[in-house]
Length: 326
Image (cartoon, rainbow, N blue to C red; front, side, top):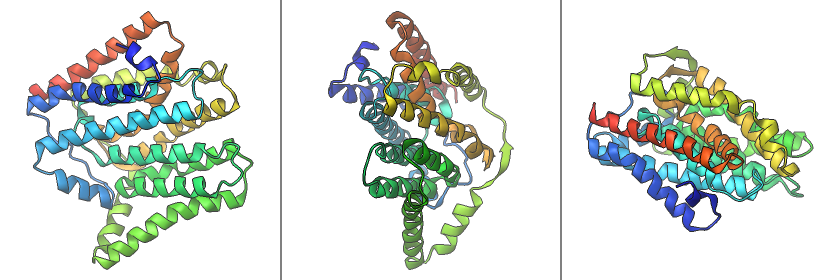
């Protein structure tokens, strides 16, 4: 099956959508998936959750489209900026797999939308490499993070990762930081103006501020805890593979992989300072872990890579079948 995603052909993107839908199918047919009880959403995050409340099919269908978009974005990011020696669909494939392994990720969550905007920001910031006029990608990267912030406030903690990416990709200048900040502030300003116009400015302020707080863990459902433990096991070797992943890459590719590691690092404060913790909020990790695992699989022997893929695929299918348990 992995051979379908080793190519750079356009139809591989369609395979990714079919793949995500296949993994979600047990949950769609199960009829027992309960939406996660999540607090601390941003203003737009609250709007999203209110929109899907009571609509089972919509709550399970939207994540398929969102993770498909994230997979395409991950593949675009990796191929455009030479994260791998070969053009491959593996980063997007493993972003989808990591998402599907945890039952609580199956229901729509504002963090899944925030991940889409985070990836748009990553695509924008990586365009800085050897770009003579950086103002547009800098502004865009800040604006995309601003949109992610309006869905989940803790995504603000990725701001240092973006600033670090600026330092990695070009000579640091105060002007560059301000151009990035202008994009972020502009989105927040226009959101505030719109909220004031519609009489919901206090709700906007409360939603964005209440999303922060000290880590407050809640008990994890067993079927969430087991795959999250497996993801933690996967993360341990991945955290040590930077040298291996970047050894044969050009300078742009090495810088890009380094940036993904920085974003992985800043998921820690985003989780610890995001208030009450539930499993669904850990969807924040799917982007960096999925991309890095996909890149690691490129150089693994095809038979061994297929074994890893089938193992994770089985876990993902089992996660979907938990919807039949309730």
